Every structure is written in C-alpha cells, then in structure tokens.
View (tube, rainbow, N blue to C red):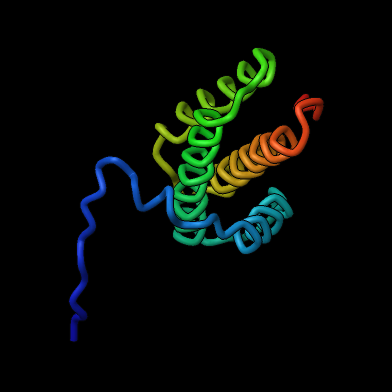
Length: 134
C-alpha cells in the first residue's frame, strides 16, 4: 500500500528560511561518524544514507549562514572567512556522495565547520568585538 505524498516546489527556498535547524541530533550524528576508525565496518549503504543526511543538513546550515550574513553588518575579515567556508561548502557538496566511511566523515566535518561559522555569527550579533577566527 502506497501513501500519497506532496511534492513541494520551492525554487526560492522560502520554506528553509522558516524552519529551525535541528542541531542536536545532527551534531550527535557528526560525533558518531567522526568517531569511526578505518577499521569500522559500516555498510556502504549506511554510509551513503548518512552522507546524504549530512549533505542536506549542511545545505540548510549554509543557507542560514548566507541569510544571516545578508542582514548583519560584518567586518571584512569575518566576511572573507565566511565566504571561504561557504565556497568550500559549495565545492564539497557538488561532489556526489558515495558509500564510504571517508565520504560520511567528510560531510560530518563540513557540518561541524558550518556550525562553527554559525556560532561565530551568533557571537557577532551579541557583541561586535567577538572573534571569529578559526
């Protein structure tokens, strides 16, 4: 029995702007994935699904960072650093996910780096002297 579903057409990503990020479960997933070792036996399909989950979340966090940058006055140094992180995010997300531990860990590191930038922006919004150095 199939269940009906609705396809959402949102070319301007307006839905993403209204949904809060679900940080805690994703950061727990990031921690778990980064704890894997080269000897970890994770099924390729699991790695692929985890990489896809983290890729989607990375896109959401990057969109939130872009939105915050557009509405906040930022100094040149902070803006340059965030631009570098976002360009690297776009580059890394352009590569297809594969079913390897290495790919899943790369996406986990990407999500972690994006949250570091998002935290930096949060600190900047509470006080203009907050440091955003990596």
